[in-house]
Amino acid sequence: MSISLLVTSSTSSQEVCFSGVNGTPDYISEVAVGSFSPHSLADEDRYDSGIAVAGTGAQYSSTVNPGGQSNLNDPYFQKQWALSRIQISGLWQVTSGRPETIVAIIDTGIDSNHEEIRGKVVAEVNFTDSPTALDGNGHGTHIAGIVVSSSNNNLGVAGIAPETRLMNVKVADDNGICQAGAVARGIIWAVDKGARVINISLELSQPSLELEKAVDYAWASGVVVVAAAGNYGGGQLAYPACYENCIAVAATRQDDTLAPLSNHGDWVDVAAPGFDIYSTLPGNNYGYKSGTSFATAYVSGLAALLFDITCDTKGNGRLNDDVRAAIEAGCRQACISGVDKGIIDAAGSMAQIGYSAPNLP
Ligand SMILES: [Ca+2]
Ligand SMILES: [Ca+2]
Ligand SMILES: [Ca+2]
Image (cartoon, rainbow, N blue to C red):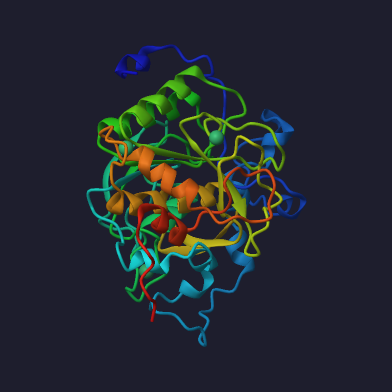
């Protein structure tokens, strides 16, 4: 529970983790680039790279829905089905986040120059061999945009928590490959820099004591840790998501069904929208991605907002337990099996905290 675990030797230095979508048959054809060789990877890992979906935006029209009704002027807001599905609008009337509430994105880096993200990355670190903390993959920028894109600015999309700020903790290289030790060090770095929420849209198939200790350190420090349940489509465990002090997030589709790619099981705590998710991509671009990674980002954004309105009900000096409880107890029950609490629901979480959703226009 201290920085000393930084010197603990990692037992998993050769492990790789991948972020993004897995290889459900629909997506195999979407493996657009392959700068790493499939021969070096286990078959079940092969499609589990952010690269696999980096090009999926191309299959969608980027045309703005001209007839769409929206109370926001962001041109792609109509594509963001997830925001209404989690009933965010009432919570937005109370808070759109605060700059002091920092969400650390433990990922492939962030394009901090993106028009929707510029000025919102308050700290960054690079634990990879990549020469820059910028995002050469696209995965981390997509996550960042889900959380923090400026809203109602006549540009792009609307973030769920646009007034929060980000830490860019690059632990996965531009191929989406990382080591457990780097993830652990990234978590500790973010905690010590004051992150309140840590988004881990990465999954490892093997446990790592170093990683588990880092998650426990974050939790004990008052941080909400949110992690992707993984994209193998089955019941196998993903790390760090399955650790007790992570909120493990499965992915749903627009009809509230579990996305076929999503892992599930009694260890999976909540589900959130994670299929055909439209968000930012490097170079002022936008596109769709699918996977538990992006579901995780919605939970992280909700957590950031709830930090603004929750109270320390148990008087233990921390808010992360209260925020996590509000997220989980506020979930909407859905007919999905393999997810413990249900689908995240901002209105439900507000009710748990004692707010009733304001009347909407
Ligand atoms: Ca915007
Ligand atoms: Ca769990
Ligand atoms: Ca508390």
